[in-house]
Image (cartoon, rainbow, N blue to C red):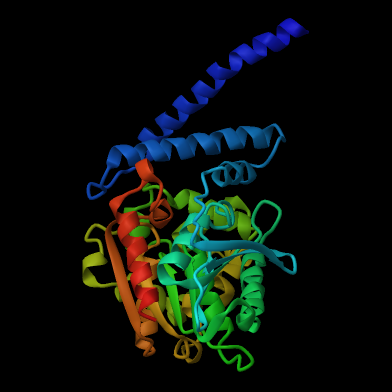
Length: 407
């Protein structure tokens, strides 16, 4: 038996090397690296590491050691958290929801600005720890009190837990602003990726709440605001660009919404979209609303496939406003606070941002738009990762800081 264990241990390095080589092959086989991307070699290296980590996580999941999302989040959380001597960090729970409070250490004679932050990573990756450095940076550079919300995720938790956790934590914070030394007239909601989508949803949910302080501004960093039209130019152009390829995005969406993966193709082709729905909401979801330079000349026709009622019945919750804030009523959109919207050229969610920008502007909401020509999905969280940082990561983080300081 001892010999068998020794053989197994000796074989492990070769096994994991094989998994890594498979990840590298998968990268070269499926990934497109845009020409405009700076530091492409580093980008490729980082993507190979992520693919390798996910592959090992999938192996552990099949062996019932732990789920792939849990394994990846475990490794993410082991990344170095920079202790900032100028910021006091406190871990709290609002009920069952873990949150992290970042407060500038310097004394002040007046209440500070407050920032509600919802991290990215969707229902799979991301955590309070993996976004710790970004939130600490926001607190220090803007002299603000930052509350980061650690919403629950897959595989244990499904729709609508992300929204309800973020909403409940936000309401709790807004009711206790004086406790944290926050000026009620200077609260900003900020989120990245799915967190940006949560900003849109929560701003809409709080419309008309006279019992709470009004949010001063919203910052949406390449937000996901719909899972209905996957035929937009950015989905077609960037479907194989890290770090959010289309197949991975729709797989995560299906798992969170408890939609069987067999309906992925119907969702991609729009076969689940009822003709009446597209007739009513196509004006907000169509690429016709995009600036001309973002419309691809070689784009496939943006026409939903023939309607499949079975597909609709299995996926119909994607048409709820809680999953598609872009289709909220005009009366709600018109009451939203001013917005700072970030889009990245090499991101499949680029057109989501552009469509929501137009949606807001059409209803008279003031919008500041920041487009990152060399940006990709998830770039902001790499702003301090040294070798794996990119020029767009730093410039985007500074742009967000500049906007918030102007509030």
